Each structure stands twice: as structure tokens, then as C-alpha cells.
Image (cartoon, rainbow, N blue to C red; front, side):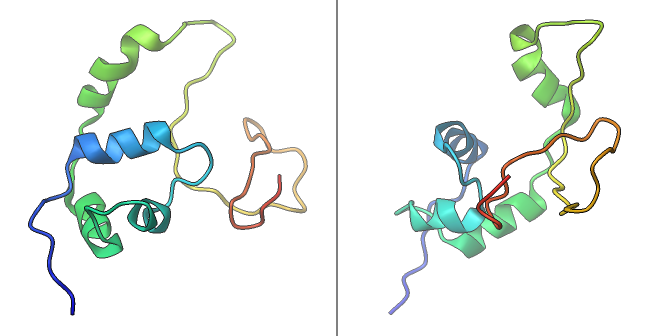
Length: 101
């Protein structure tokens, strides 16, 4: 029997998960390691939450070291480019799906 959780997902709970997770940042992983939230609850929360860029900037601006040679990039898109070796501003990164760099 499924019993609906009355506790709504909060931005604080989601952010704490992101900060504490070392490798896997997926909703499935969060739900698997949470007694409070289901995958569906988390999915609906992220679909409906509108986090304003201004709010993000206010929270992180004091933690950023500015440099003329530095970049700050936010992008949650990871495209598999196994045969592309020289794309400007693109770096190799770990793929949880492929379990490799």
C-alpha cells in the first residue's frame, strides 16, 4: 500500500542533497536515499520551482574568485561527444551513465 507523503519538497532539502552528494546528482538517487521524498515528488518540484538567477547570485557571489582568465558556466546539459576532440570551452567530465570520462 502506498501512503502519500504530506511533507513537500523544499529548496533547502534539494540543495542539501546536491551539496552532500559526491558523485550522483539524479532524482532517482535522491529518492533512493530519502525516506521523505519520492522520485515523482522531486520531479514535480523541479518542474515547477522557478529559481531566479538573482537568488542564485546572491548566495554564491562571495564564494567566487574573479579572474580575467576564468569562466563561470552553469549548464545541466551533458551531450555525449565521443568523436569530438576540440570544441571551444568544452572539457572532459565524468559521465554517470557511461561510468567513465
